[in-house]
Image 1 (tube, rainbow, N blue to C red):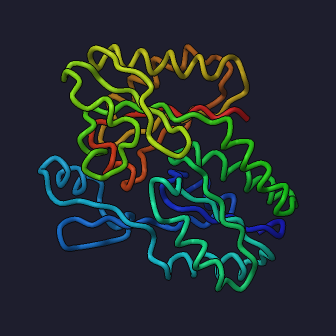
Image 2 (cartoon, helix red, strand yellow):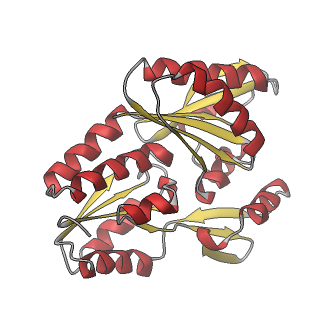
Length: 280
């Protein structure tokens, strides 16, 4: 690993494995329970999870195994990191941040634990940018300054077929105000102050997709941005979204295309798609 600062995050960052490997980022998986069985989300096939959700089975999520976090800090130290920056899903959405602080106290090297106040590729792009700073030899302060800048500017724009999964998981936040809307009104959501927040309500799925694209283009506003399209059990819908988005962002060199973390998928539900816009 180049540089002396190691980066750790959790799997809700949705960072593709190839990029995590390239930049030496350790990604610790959160956990999913289906019925009586709890496993690392990496060991729960997406199709099995989608069927469980659609079948109204008892499904919930939990923070990473504490041993996994401890191993992550030890692994970074073994690679030569003198300090570690550990960045996690919003503390208003998960207990992962609090758990990381407890485990960090026993790390062989100092660990700076950061509450991202977001999730998905807003978190992922920030961690990747911080890893590049670390790889160039930046110290912990420069790494955390980059994190703060990228997290502050990023936006998660989310479409869900229904708010029921967020309600069941207790992550609905201010979006609870949308419950009870006519079924034809489709909710668009975002993350604000660490919580899921209403963005808009649109009549019908196709109009919602167009509105999502328009919102993303407005957020980009001609800036240099990283963009990701994320989905959960909705590949076709996400591909159509990408086709609509590309002409609206001619200056973007590449759009990252990824299926979200299963932990996020549990709370958004099958059919969810989203666009992340992260000014560079």
